[in-house]
Length: 468
Image (cartoon, rainbow, N blue to C red):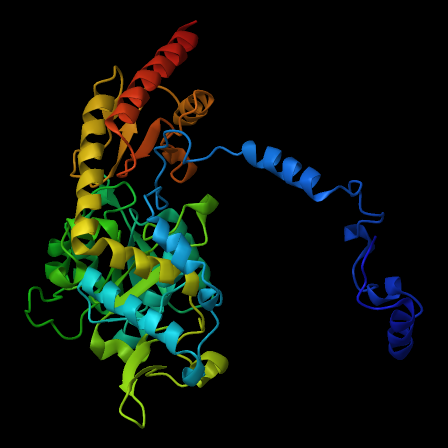
Protein backbone atom coordinates (compact mmCIF):
# COMPACT_ATOMS: atom_id res chain seq x y z
CA UNK A 1 0.00 0.00 0.00
CA UNK A 2 1.43 3.37 -1.02
CA UNK A 3 2.15 5.83 1.78
CA UNK A 4 1.68 9.55 1.28
CA UNK A 5 2.43 12.04 4.06
CA UNK A 6 -0.31 14.33 2.68
CA UNK A 7 -3.93 13.50 2.16
CA UNK A 8 -5.67 14.03 -1.18
CA UNK A 9 -7.32 17.12 0.33
CA UNK A 10 -3.91 18.46 1.45
CA UNK A 11 -2.58 18.14 -2.10
CA UNK A 12 -5.67 19.81 -3.58
CA UNK A 13 -5.27 22.75 -1.18
CA UNK A 14 -1.60 23.18 -2.11
CA UNK A 15 -2.37 23.09 -5.83
CA UNK A 16 -5.14 25.64 -5.31
CA UNK A 17 -2.75 28.02 -3.56
CA UNK A 18 -0.30 27.59 -6.45
CA UNK A 19 -3.05 28.16 -9.00
CA UNK A 20 -2.54 24.76 -10.60
CA UNK A 21 -5.06 22.14 -11.63
CA UNK A 22 -2.88 19.04 -11.30
CA UNK A 23 0.46 17.65 -10.17
CA UNK A 24 1.45 17.38 -13.85
CA UNK A 25 1.20 21.16 -14.20
CA UNK A 26 3.59 21.52 -11.27
CA UNK A 27 6.28 19.78 -13.34
CA UNK A 28 5.48 21.48 -16.64
CA UNK A 29 8.94 23.09 -16.71
CA UNK A 30 10.50 19.65 -17.24
CA UNK A 31 10.72 18.95 -21.00
CA UNK A 32 8.46 16.16 -22.23
CA UNK A 33 11.33 14.34 -23.96
CA UNK A 34 13.10 13.61 -20.68
CA UNK A 35 10.02 12.52 -18.75
CA UNK A 36 9.36 8.82 -18.20
CA UNK A 37 5.82 9.04 -19.59
CA UNK A 38 4.54 5.91 -17.87
CA UNK A 39 4.04 4.33 -14.46
CA UNK A 40 7.10 2.90 -12.74
CA UNK A 41 7.49 -0.82 -13.37
CA UNK A 42 7.97 -2.01 -9.84
CA UNK A 43 7.88 -5.65 -8.71
CA UNK A 44 4.99 -7.04 -6.71
CA UNK A 45 5.02 -6.64 -2.96
CA UNK A 46 7.17 -9.16 -1.13
CA UNK A 47 7.70 -10.19 2.48
CA UNK A 48 10.82 -9.18 4.40
CA UNK A 49 12.37 -12.69 4.20
CA UNK A 50 11.77 -12.74 0.44
CA UNK A 51 13.38 -9.34 0.02
CA UNK A 52 16.40 -10.39 2.12
CA UNK A 53 16.86 -13.53 0.01
CA UNK A 54 16.66 -11.54 -3.22
CA UNK A 55 19.10 -8.88 -2.05
CA UNK A 56 21.46 -11.59 -0.78
CA UNK A 57 21.40 -13.27 -4.19
CA UNK A 58 22.20 -9.96 -5.86
CA UNK A 59 25.07 -9.32 -3.42
CA UNK A 60 26.51 -12.77 -4.13
CA UNK A 61 27.01 -11.72 -7.75
CA UNK A 62 29.61 -9.16 -6.64
CA UNK A 63 33.27 -10.16 -6.70
CA UNK A 64 34.60 -9.61 -3.18
CA UNK A 65 38.09 -8.95 -1.86
CA UNK A 66 37.65 -10.82 1.42
CA UNK A 67 36.72 -14.31 0.22
CA UNK A 68 39.36 -14.84 -2.48
CA UNK A 69 42.96 -13.79 -3.14
CA UNK A 70 42.93 -10.20 -4.37
CA UNK A 71 45.86 -8.13 -5.60
CA UNK A 72 44.08 -4.89 -6.43
CA UNK A 73 45.39 -1.69 -4.92
CA UNK A 74 45.98 1.62 -6.71
CA UNK A 75 44.79 3.68 -3.76
CA UNK A 76 42.29 1.33 -2.10
CA UNK A 77 43.53 -1.65 -0.09
CA UNK A 78 42.24 -4.62 1.89
CA UNK A 79 43.80 -4.54 5.36
CA UNK A 80 43.09 -6.21 8.67
CA UNK A 81 40.74 -4.14 10.85
CA UNK A 82 40.60 -4.97 14.58
CA UNK A 83 37.08 -6.02 15.63
CA UNK A 84 37.08 -3.36 18.35
CA UNK A 85 36.96 -0.64 15.68
CA UNK A 86 33.63 -1.86 14.32
CA UNK A 87 32.25 -2.20 17.85
CA UNK A 88 33.34 1.23 19.10
CA UNK A 89 32.67 3.24 15.94
CA UNK A 90 29.10 1.89 15.79
CA UNK A 91 28.19 3.41 19.15
CA UNK A 92 25.31 5.86 18.87
CA UNK A 93 27.40 8.77 20.15
CA UNK A 94 29.49 8.66 16.97
CA UNK A 95 26.68 8.33 14.45
CA UNK A 96 26.82 11.94 13.32
CA UNK A 97 29.63 13.85 11.67
CA UNK A 98 27.83 17.20 11.85
CA UNK A 99 29.94 20.24 12.64
CA UNK A 100 30.23 20.51 16.45
CA UNK A 101 29.75 24.27 16.68
CA UNK A 102 28.22 24.05 20.18
CA UNK A 103 31.25 23.02 22.16
CA UNK A 104 29.29 22.68 25.40
CA UNK A 105 27.35 19.71 23.97
CA UNK A 106 30.08 18.28 21.70
CA UNK A 107 33.00 17.54 23.99
CA UNK A 108 33.19 13.83 23.11
CA UNK A 109 33.23 14.47 19.37
CA UNK A 110 35.71 17.32 19.72
CA UNK A 111 38.06 15.26 21.88
CA UNK A 112 37.97 12.39 19.36
CA UNK A 113 38.89 14.81 16.55
CA UNK A 114 41.66 16.30 18.69
CA UNK A 115 43.12 12.82 19.24
CA UNK A 116 42.90 12.16 15.49
CA UNK A 117 44.74 15.41 14.69
CA UNK A 118 47.47 14.62 17.23
CA UNK A 119 48.11 11.13 15.84
CA UNK A 120 48.17 12.38 12.22
CA UNK A 121 50.84 14.93 13.18
CA UNK A 122 52.88 12.21 14.87
CA UNK A 123 52.52 9.96 11.83
CA UNK A 124 53.45 12.58 9.21
CA UNK A 125 55.98 14.57 11.21
CA UNK A 126 54.04 17.76 10.53
CA UNK A 127 53.00 20.42 13.05
CA UNK A 128 49.23 20.73 12.66
CA UNK A 129 46.36 18.73 11.18
CA UNK A 130 42.80 19.63 10.34
CA UNK A 131 39.78 17.49 11.26
CA UNK A 132 40.01 15.58 7.92
CA UNK A 133 38.80 16.01 4.35
CA UNK A 134 36.50 14.03 2.06
CA UNK A 135 39.32 12.02 0.45
CA UNK A 136 42.83 12.43 -0.95
CA UNK A 137 41.54 14.08 -4.14
CA UNK A 138 39.81 16.93 -2.32
CA UNK A 139 42.75 17.20 0.07
CA UNK A 140 45.03 17.75 -2.93
CA UNK A 141 42.77 20.43 -4.41
CA UNK A 142 42.56 22.25 -1.07
CA UNK A 143 46.34 21.95 -0.61
CA UNK A 144 46.89 23.70 -3.95
CA UNK A 145 44.42 26.44 -3.00
CA UNK A 146 46.19 26.89 0.32
CA UNK A 147 49.58 27.06 -1.40
CA UNK A 148 48.17 29.75 -3.68
CA UNK A 149 47.04 31.75 -0.64
CA UNK A 150 50.35 31.25 1.20
CA UNK A 151 52.72 31.83 -1.71
CA UNK A 152 50.83 34.87 -3.06
CA UNK A 153 52.93 34.51 -6.16
CA UNK A 154 52.75 32.42 -9.30
CA UNK A 155 49.86 30.67 -10.97
CA UNK A 156 51.34 27.30 -11.93
CA UNK A 157 51.46 24.10 -9.89
CA UNK A 158 53.73 21.30 -11.09
CA UNK A 159 52.05 17.91 -10.67
CA UNK A 160 53.90 14.65 -11.24
CA UNK A 161 52.38 12.27 -13.77
CA UNK A 162 52.93 9.60 -11.10
CA UNK A 163 50.28 11.19 -8.84
CA UNK A 164 47.11 9.09 -8.74
CA UNK A 165 45.12 9.91 -11.92
CA UNK A 166 41.88 10.25 -9.95
CA UNK A 167 43.44 12.82 -7.61
CA UNK A 168 44.64 14.77 -10.64
CA UNK A 169 41.16 14.68 -12.17
CA UNK A 170 39.67 16.12 -8.97
CA UNK A 171 42.31 18.85 -9.00
CA UNK A 172 41.57 19.69 -12.63
CA UNK A 173 37.88 20.01 -11.78
CA UNK A 174 38.61 22.39 -8.91
CA UNK A 175 40.93 24.48 -11.10
CA UNK A 176 38.54 24.72 -14.07
CA UNK A 177 37.55 28.32 -13.20
CA UNK A 178 40.56 29.24 -11.10
CA UNK A 179 43.63 31.27 -12.13
CA UNK A 180 45.95 28.42 -11.08
CA UNK A 181 47.08 26.09 -13.88
CA UNK A 182 48.24 22.50 -13.28
CA UNK A 183 51.26 21.52 -15.37
CA UNK A 184 52.18 17.83 -15.62
CA UNK A 185 55.75 16.71 -14.96
CA UNK A 186 56.78 13.62 -16.93
CA UNK A 187 58.36 10.40 -15.73
CA UNK A 188 61.66 8.59 -16.02
CA UNK A 189 61.44 4.84 -15.25
CA UNK A 190 57.99 5.61 -13.74
CA UNK A 191 59.58 8.02 -11.26
CA UNK A 192 59.08 11.79 -11.39
CA UNK A 193 61.67 13.41 -13.64
CA UNK A 194 63.41 15.70 -11.12
CA UNK A 195 65.49 17.28 -13.88
CA UNK A 196 62.25 18.50 -15.49
CA UNK A 197 61.24 20.15 -12.22
CA UNK A 198 64.68 21.75 -11.90
CA UNK A 199 64.53 23.02 -15.47
CA UNK A 200 61.05 24.49 -15.00
CA UNK A 201 62.05 26.20 -11.77
CA UNK A 202 65.13 27.68 -13.44
CA UNK A 203 63.18 28.96 -16.44
CA UNK A 204 59.89 29.93 -14.82
CA UNK A 205 60.42 29.74 -11.05
CA UNK A 206 58.51 32.88 -10.11
CA UNK A 207 55.35 31.50 -11.73
CA UNK A 208 55.49 28.19 -9.84
CA UNK A 209 53.58 28.23 -6.56
CA UNK A 210 53.88 24.55 -5.62
CA UNK A 211 55.16 21.11 -6.63
CA UNK A 212 53.01 18.02 -6.01
CA UNK A 213 54.63 14.60 -5.56
CA UNK A 214 53.24 11.29 -4.31
CA UNK A 215 55.30 8.85 -2.28
CA UNK A 216 55.09 5.96 -2.87
CA UNK A 217 53.75 7.06 -6.22
CA UNK A 218 50.81 5.59 -8.13
CA UNK A 219 53.04 2.81 -9.48
CA UNK A 220 54.15 1.87 -5.96
CA UNK A 221 57.65 3.30 -6.42
CA UNK A 222 59.55 5.25 -3.78
CA UNK A 223 60.25 8.79 -5.00
CA UNK A 224 63.49 10.62 -4.07
CA UNK A 225 61.66 13.01 -1.73
CA UNK A 226 64.81 14.25 -0.01
CA UNK A 227 66.17 15.34 -3.38
CA UNK A 228 62.88 17.10 -4.10
CA UNK A 229 63.06 18.89 -0.75
CA UNK A 230 66.62 20.08 -1.45
CA UNK A 231 65.65 21.15 -4.97
CA UNK A 232 62.87 23.35 -3.57
CA UNK A 233 64.94 24.67 -0.66
CA UNK A 234 62.53 23.20 1.87
CA UNK A 235 65.02 22.79 4.69
CA UNK A 236 65.40 19.34 6.23
CA UNK A 237 66.16 17.89 9.66
CA UNK A 238 65.73 21.24 11.39
CA UNK A 239 67.41 23.35 8.68
CA UNK A 240 65.77 26.67 7.89
CA UNK A 241 63.57 26.80 4.82
CA UNK A 242 64.46 29.23 2.06
CA UNK A 243 62.08 32.18 1.79
CA UNK A 244 60.08 32.96 -1.34
CA UNK A 245 60.04 29.51 -2.88
CA UNK A 246 57.42 27.08 -4.24
CA UNK A 247 55.76 24.89 -1.63
CA UNK A 248 56.24 21.12 -1.58
CA UNK A 249 52.95 19.22 -1.36
CA UNK A 250 53.54 15.58 -0.48
CA UNK A 251 50.86 12.91 -0.95
CA UNK A 252 51.74 9.99 1.29
CA UNK A 253 50.57 6.44 1.96
CA UNK A 254 50.00 6.44 5.76
CA UNK A 255 51.05 2.80 6.21
CA UNK A 256 54.30 3.39 4.31
CA UNK A 257 55.31 5.88 7.02
CA UNK A 258 55.98 2.87 9.24
CA UNK A 259 59.18 2.29 7.24
CA UNK A 260 59.75 5.42 5.11
CA UNK A 261 60.81 8.90 6.17
CA UNK A 262 57.87 11.11 7.08
CA UNK A 263 57.14 14.34 5.13
CA UNK A 264 58.37 16.49 7.98
CA UNK A 265 61.83 14.90 7.69
CA UNK A 266 62.31 16.05 4.10
CA UNK A 267 60.77 19.49 4.56
CA UNK A 268 57.30 19.15 3.05
CA UNK A 269 55.10 22.20 3.52
CA UNK A 270 51.83 20.27 3.23
CA UNK A 271 51.37 16.51 3.65
CA UNK A 272 48.11 14.92 2.60
CA UNK A 273 46.78 11.49 1.72
CA UNK A 274 43.92 9.04 1.83
CA UNK A 275 43.04 7.39 5.12
CA UNK A 276 41.11 4.40 3.78
CA UNK A 277 43.85 2.02 4.91
CA UNK A 278 43.47 3.25 8.48
CA UNK A 279 40.59 1.15 9.76
CA UNK A 280 38.20 1.53 6.82
CA UNK A 281 37.16 -1.28 4.48
CA UNK A 282 37.46 -0.84 0.70
CA UNK A 283 33.64 -0.62 0.45
CA UNK A 284 33.58 -0.59 -3.36
CA UNK A 285 35.87 2.45 -3.29
CA UNK A 286 34.40 4.51 -0.47
CA UNK A 287 33.56 6.30 1.71
CA UNK A 288 36.99 7.11 3.03
CA UNK A 289 38.66 10.22 4.44
CA UNK A 290 41.49 12.51 3.43
CA UNK A 291 44.06 13.77 5.91
CA UNK A 292 45.61 17.22 5.73
CA UNK A 293 48.67 18.26 7.74
CA UNK A 294 50.90 21.29 7.43
CA UNK A 295 53.06 23.80 9.35
CA UNK A 296 51.91 25.88 12.30
CA UNK A 297 52.64 29.15 10.50
CA UNK A 298 49.99 28.32 7.90
CA UNK A 299 47.26 27.61 10.44
CA UNK A 300 45.08 30.55 9.37
CA UNK A 301 45.01 29.25 5.78
CA UNK A 302 44.09 25.65 6.58
CA UNK A 303 40.84 24.41 4.99
CA UNK A 304 38.08 22.78 6.96
CA UNK A 305 38.05 22.64 10.73
CA UNK A 306 40.67 22.50 13.48
CA UNK A 307 39.96 21.42 17.04
CA UNK A 308 42.01 22.91 19.85
CA UNK A 309 42.40 22.28 23.57
CA UNK A 310 41.52 24.96 26.12
CA UNK A 311 40.22 25.37 29.69
CA UNK A 312 36.77 26.49 30.79
CA UNK A 313 35.86 29.11 33.41
CA UNK A 314 36.49 26.52 36.14
CA UNK A 315 39.93 25.66 34.81
CA UNK A 316 38.84 22.28 33.46
CA UNK A 317 40.21 20.97 30.17
CA UNK A 318 37.89 21.33 27.20
CA UNK A 319 37.89 21.28 23.38
CA UNK A 320 36.65 23.83 20.84
CA UNK A 321 36.82 24.64 17.15
CA UNK A 322 39.65 27.13 16.85
CA UNK A 323 41.40 29.58 14.51
CA UNK A 324 38.25 29.98 12.44
CA UNK A 325 34.94 31.69 13.01
CA UNK A 326 31.70 30.14 11.84
CA UNK A 327 31.81 32.64 8.97
CA UNK A 328 34.52 30.41 7.52
CA UNK A 329 31.78 27.91 6.75
CA UNK A 330 28.84 30.12 5.77
CA UNK A 331 30.29 33.16 3.98
CA UNK A 332 31.91 32.17 0.72
CA UNK A 333 33.59 35.51 0.10
CA UNK A 334 35.32 35.50 3.50
CA UNK A 335 36.33 31.85 3.62
CA UNK A 336 39.83 30.52 2.98
CA UNK A 337 38.09 27.37 1.75
CA UNK A 338 34.55 26.37 0.93
CA UNK A 339 34.84 22.89 2.37
CA UNK A 340 33.09 23.03 5.72
CA UNK A 341 32.64 19.44 6.88
CA UNK A 342 34.77 16.37 7.39
CA UNK A 343 34.50 12.59 7.21
CA UNK A 344 33.91 12.33 10.95
CA UNK A 345 33.04 8.66 11.29
CA UNK A 346 35.71 7.44 8.84
CA UNK A 347 38.43 9.58 10.42
CA UNK A 348 37.32 8.39 13.86
CA UNK A 349 37.94 4.83 12.67
CA UNK A 350 41.34 6.02 11.43
CA UNK A 351 42.16 7.40 14.88
CA UNK A 352 41.07 4.13 16.50
CA UNK A 353 43.23 2.13 14.09
CA UNK A 354 46.29 4.25 14.86
CA UNK A 355 45.61 4.02 18.60
CA UNK A 356 45.17 0.23 18.57
CA UNK A 357 48.26 -0.47 16.43
CA UNK A 358 50.56 2.27 17.65
CA UNK A 359 53.84 3.12 15.93
CA UNK A 360 55.17 -0.43 16.42
CA UNK A 361 52.07 -1.99 14.88
CA UNK A 362 52.10 0.34 11.87
CA UNK A 363 55.74 -0.57 11.29
CA UNK A 364 54.96 -4.30 11.45
CA UNK A 365 52.10 -3.92 8.93
CA UNK A 366 54.37 -1.93 6.59
CA UNK A 367 57.23 -4.43 6.89
CA UNK A 368 54.93 -7.40 6.25
CA UNK A 369 53.46 -5.73 3.16
CA UNK A 370 56.91 -4.91 1.82
CA UNK A 371 58.26 -8.43 2.39
CA UNK A 372 55.29 -10.03 0.65
CA UNK A 373 55.48 -7.62 -2.28
CA UNK A 374 59.17 -8.34 -2.85
CA UNK A 375 58.57 -12.09 -2.58
CA UNK A 376 55.78 -11.76 -5.15
CA UNK A 377 58.00 -9.73 -7.46
CA UNK A 378 60.45 -12.61 -7.58
CA UNK A 379 57.72 -15.19 -8.20
CA UNK A 380 55.92 -13.27 -10.94
CA UNK A 381 58.97 -12.01 -12.83
CA UNK A 382 60.10 -15.62 -12.94
CA UNK A 383 57.22 -16.42 -15.30
CA UNK A 384 58.05 -16.63 -18.98
CA UNK A 385 57.39 -13.36 -20.79
CA UNK A 386 56.73 -11.32 -17.61
CA UNK A 387 58.97 -8.30 -17.02
CA UNK A 388 59.29 -5.58 -14.40
CA UNK A 389 58.21 -2.21 -15.82
CA UNK A 390 60.56 -0.21 -13.58
CA UNK A 391 63.87 -0.94 -11.90
CA UNK A 392 63.14 1.51 -9.06
CA UNK A 393 62.57 0.50 -5.43
CA UNK A 394 58.96 -0.17 -4.48
CA UNK A 395 56.95 -0.39 -1.25
CA UNK A 396 53.97 -2.77 -1.55
CA UNK A 397 53.00 -2.35 -5.19
CA UNK A 398 54.67 -2.76 -8.58
CA UNK A 399 53.79 -2.86 -12.27
CA UNK A 400 54.59 -5.78 -14.56
CA UNK A 401 54.57 -6.02 -18.34
CA UNK A 402 52.76 -9.13 -19.54
CA UNK A 403 53.19 -10.80 -22.93
CA UNK A 404 49.44 -10.38 -23.62
CA UNK A 405 46.69 -7.83 -23.00
CA UNK A 406 46.39 -7.07 -19.26
CA UNK A 407 42.62 -6.59 -19.28
CA UNK A 408 42.20 -10.02 -20.86
CA UNK A 409 44.40 -11.50 -18.13
CA UNK A 410 42.40 -9.72 -15.44
CA UNK A 411 39.14 -11.25 -16.68
CA UNK A 412 40.73 -14.69 -17.00
CA UNK A 413 42.04 -14.55 -13.42
CA UNK A 414 38.59 -13.46 -12.21
CA UNK A 415 37.12 -16.64 -13.71
CA UNK A 416 39.64 -18.56 -11.59
CA UNK A 417 38.44 -16.71 -8.47
CA UNK A 418 41.48 -14.46 -8.24
CA UNK A 419 41.38 -10.68 -8.12
CA UNK A 420 44.22 -9.66 -10.40
CA UNK A 421 46.12 -6.41 -10.42
CA UNK A 422 44.91 -3.20 -12.06
CA UNK A 423 45.27 -3.08 -15.87
CA UNK A 424 47.14 0.20 -16.28
CA UNK A 425 45.53 1.03 -19.61
CA UNK A 426 42.41 2.00 -17.65
CA UNK A 427 44.29 5.10 -16.53
CA UNK A 428 47.20 5.24 -18.98
CA UNK A 429 46.17 4.54 -22.61
CA UNK A 430 48.86 2.68 -24.48
CA UNK A 431 50.02 0.64 -21.50
CA UNK A 432 47.77 -2.25 -22.54
CA UNK A 433 50.07 -5.06 -21.41
CA UNK A 434 50.91 -3.65 -17.99
CA UNK A 435 49.29 -4.60 -14.69
CA UNK A 436 49.74 -3.04 -11.25
CA UNK A 437 49.81 -5.59 -8.40
CA UNK A 438 49.39 -4.74 -4.69
CA UNK A 439 50.24 -6.86 -1.64
CA UNK A 440 49.13 -6.14 1.92
CA UNK A 441 49.70 -7.99 5.18
CA UNK A 442 46.54 -10.04 4.53
CA UNK A 443 48.11 -11.77 1.52
CA UNK A 444 49.96 -15.02 2.23
CA UNK A 445 52.87 -16.64 0.41
CA UNK A 446 50.45 -19.44 -0.47
CA UNK A 447 48.20 -16.83 -2.18
CA UNK A 448 51.19 -15.49 -4.09
CA UNK A 449 52.31 -18.94 -5.22
CA UNK A 450 48.74 -19.68 -6.31
CA UNK A 451 48.69 -16.40 -8.27
CA UNK A 452 51.97 -17.34 -9.93
CA UNK A 453 50.66 -20.77 -10.95
CA UNK A 454 47.34 -19.47 -12.30
CA UNK A 455 48.89 -16.46 -14.04
CA UNK A 456 51.37 -18.79 -15.73
CA UNK A 457 48.51 -20.98 -16.98
CA UNK A 458 46.50 -17.99 -18.20
CA UNK A 459 49.47 -16.57 -20.11
CA UNK A 460 50.20 -19.94 -21.70
CA UNK A 461 46.59 -20.30 -22.83
CA UNK A 462 46.42 -16.76 -24.19
CA UNK A 463 49.71 -17.16 -26.09
CA UNK A 464 48.54 -20.44 -27.59
CA UNK A 465 45.31 -18.80 -28.77
CA UNK A 466 47.24 -15.89 -30.23
CA UNK A 467 49.42 -18.26 -32.26
CA UNK A 468 46.48 -20.40 -33.41
